[in-house]
Amino acid sequence: MSTSLGTPGTARDIVRTRFTATQRTLHWLMAAAILAMLFIGVGMKSTITPKYLTLVSIHKPLGIAILVLALLRLGVRLRFGTPPLPADLPAPMRLGAVLSHWALYALMIVMPLLGWAMLSAAGYPIRLGAGITLPPILAQDDHLHAVLWSLHSNLAFVFFALILLHLAAGLFHALVRRDGVFEAMAPVSDNSVPGHRTPTAAE
Amino acid sequence: MIAGVVGVSAAAFAYTAGWLSPHRLTPTRMVDGFGPTTPEKLGHRRNHAKGICFTGVFDANGAGSALSKARVFAAGSYPVIGRFNLGTPNPQATDASVRVRGLSIDIHTPDGGEWRSGMISVPFFPVSNPQAFYALLEASGSKDPNAMGQFAAAHPEIKPFGAWAKTAPWTGSYAEERYNGVNAFLFTDDAGNTRAVRWTMEPAAQPVPVSPDELAKQGPDVLEKEITERIAKEPARWTLRLQVANDGDPTADPSKAWPADRRTVDAGTLVVQKIEPESDGPCRDINYDPTVLPAGVSTSDDPFPAARSAAYAKSYDLRSAEAAHYPRNDGKPEGATP
Image: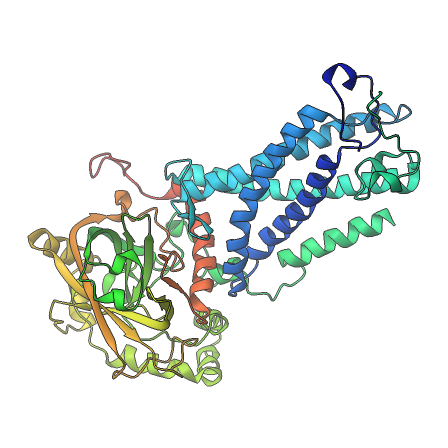
């Protein structure tokens, strides 16, 4: 298992070429959740049919689930880090990779909080379904609602654009550079990734 | 290939957002149907724009528990923030010029439950579905003199509304109106039985017919003045009457009233105790979204509550962004602001 990093003393000696299984699971689970979330978000704002209520009733609990997963994922990321980027990756691409990843983390955490705060400022009850109601995190305030709503809806498009960029970059690594960056996060087992080193306990 | 994947993803997103479907009836189009946003409308509700706040209680007698497990029907007294209003997008309309009056309520119960409802003085909705309502808005806003005639020909369900508008007596008070929930909701009792229910607020005050001309002579805000003076003397009351559908009654079409012989349950009394101007009143910032319901009440196959929820949210998003234009006092004494 590539997840066994051994004791802290040996961790820095191990050069992992893939994200840990926990990180890969979180990544693909959240990729599906976030894409669904963005589509539900723009979809629900585009209809007055009963689908509107169904979409809203998914949007709220899914958003909170993404918030919880994102915090968990941030912890895992800080604990396990990332495999190094290829040494020959040009500096602008390296910078782009680092900045876009932190922007994605920020949005994963900020978007649900903005949504929660926005509903609080509007004085709506925040029902997640199954009898669960979240407390408001802000007092009711028209002006604040307007600011939060504007941020929530505009950042959704920024988020989607970043995801498209992330997708394009992933495919670029997989199909053009073929440098193992895509394989580091690919939703497949270690054994099916050629050249992957599985650290052993001895390392 | 990369460009293809990204392009298809972006196109799917644009389609979902409705950008590729200009004919989709979006909340924005529905709200725009109420006409151009002239300066005096900024910061106000996009429909039922003129109103006045009240506070009071709902005294439940417990009888409603036979239909719904919601706490609001268990015997007890629960606080209400409400709003009397006029069915017009113009916040400066004169009271005698608006045919349809409304009552909105927001009731909180100690279990965290909340029930918001907006009712109107018409006993049924003018049209059958939200698309027809949008068509009605378009026809009534049209410069084409034949537009309304064409609409009525295509939507014969509008006829009873026309008859009501002509023949139903006008009254000189918000307190003398019966307010009708119009939409059907599903009530679920403790045993899990679900029934379709509509509700009305039956006024305790005796309606006194008055002609709109007489009413107009009493000033542009006659209803607001009247209700303020009336409630200052004593509270006004309504009985909440729940009407239960028989099997086969139309639940998806609020333009069809259910027969009067259907089972009814009087669930309690709405007591209006205090009137406050909307400008700094507690109802000002409430979106009376009819899908904010307590556990034990849920939406039915009536398409209107979902459409209202979507359109009201749009209206709220717009007016909260325009709050700086709204003539609020923010606690300053009356007359302190121009």
